[in-house]
Picture 1 (cartoon, one colour):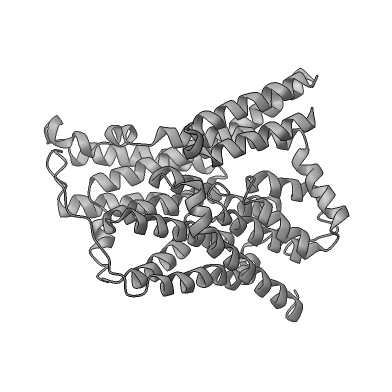
Picture 2: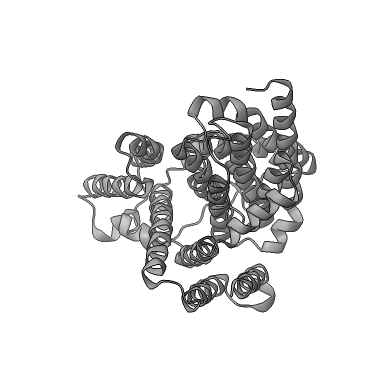
Length: 428
């Protein structure tokens, strides 16, 4: 049965990768794959109560991420409806794509460390639609944003879900992880940026023409600024909310959406329905790409079935016995996270190694945080940031592999080598 589960997952993964060739929407494939995997798991003769517990836990984890994603996307849509991104775009004066790439890369890197890689990707990819008219340029920038967001999320406890898992589990501490992984993560970004800047050298920024979309009155300068800064403040406060209350991030983001909704209703209360309709949260909710959300649900549930059937745990144990070298094993785990979701991989790693043998802030835990956080950039579906970018810009799997994967790979190894050398020269 375990072999059948593995085969079904591989076939579903292949169908997702070949979406455009076989002309079957990846969301349908993900849902069918998840349904088949859980059905096979149920037919394995597993204890019904245990099966229900596993499915309930998976559903809770999936729902939290999906609700967070929907909340973040809604906030971005509301800010966009109010032309809030003009607050940033009006300050970007460069006419060269290479210069813009450096600016966007660094903004995404540091923004991701404060917010998280998923939210940062949504915000920055949406911003690129306001700055770039050529689709090929936007796709290239989306790829670099994924690399930058994942790199930025790896060196802080709240920037990436896997780093957060290690932080909550006690494997890493805040100051130590920031000190140890800042330079490796920065190198992970700088290497692709340097190559990309050379490729784009001399190319101009082609801005999109302003289009009338038939909507009601546009937001005033005050309204645009207010909704932009409120939206960003809500996103920034989510990790603070989590730290103070110990409640999951999705509740913080939904709380923030409610506040933004209230402010919006008060702000536009004196306008006619026709003029204010496109500025409301209700309209923003209708503009969310639900196909991408459904795809995310399918992928997370499918991977969860592999976690509960211990397939991923067995893979990690096999690596431990076969490879032996700790640094090589963690590098491989990072590469595997480009194919399979990094959350269950890190969860399996946390269960594989004891805290007694590997205390907090040891080489193993910090290197796992780096590799699992940045390895997902190598393939478009290897991270939440990549999946979000894939949905927002309809990025083709093979286009990403051809244009971006190589850049992500050299950045990944660049940062990994730096960290290994750093730990050998200056051990904790």
